[in-house]
Length: 263
Ligand SMILES: [Fe+2]
Image (cartoon, rainbow, N blue to C red; front, top):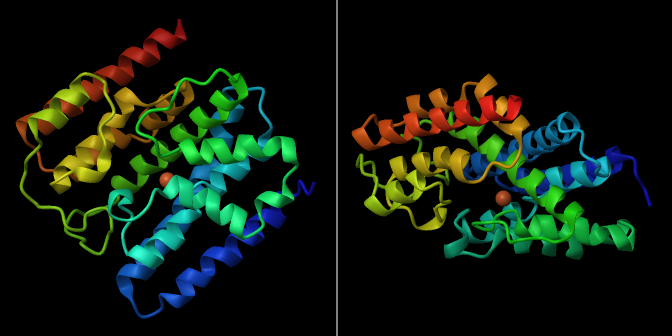
């Protein structure tokens, strides 16, 4: 099996650039495709970094592969449905696996390694990770989810909420409202289903809330803190009593976990 990652990076480039070139002249399409491409590379870098710093006994080829290809189905999804909302289109974890199959990419991988690529990608966008008895399967899946969320924090801290070209904010109201259900779930450390949110503020606050419900590794929390992501995300939000409460709650959680894990 080819293990030179450059070969796979070229396949990725060729595949996604087709969509970006086709979107020429359509600002929203171009922006959303380009953002997904940038996201894919960031998730690749994040997952390698977390795996290395955690000194995990994992195959770094697989780690890099699932990082770069986890959202490969997003391009087909947006091309066909003009949304990244899985509820209004199709499950993009499933679509990513389908693209890997249809494009013959998964066939390039040794047969016994394929589940460690297919399953973590298929599970990366589940609301919660199911219990996994295979320790390696857990590690790849947990790493991918951390690396993906971590880049979510970076991108959300850059997104201006007025930019309606961003699929992330499309069709959401600007009212400074967080529903009681969303608020209570976050304060209970529960992950919130992200595809039926009503306001821009809810989308932002749910992303911030992932820090307390869905981060698996110490290194990820450390990177969140180093980059000041909570503050940067909060600066892009409407400052309401609820959003401020969640902001403080998340910061306290990070401090507590980081100081516990050092001991
Ligand atoms: Fe994804």
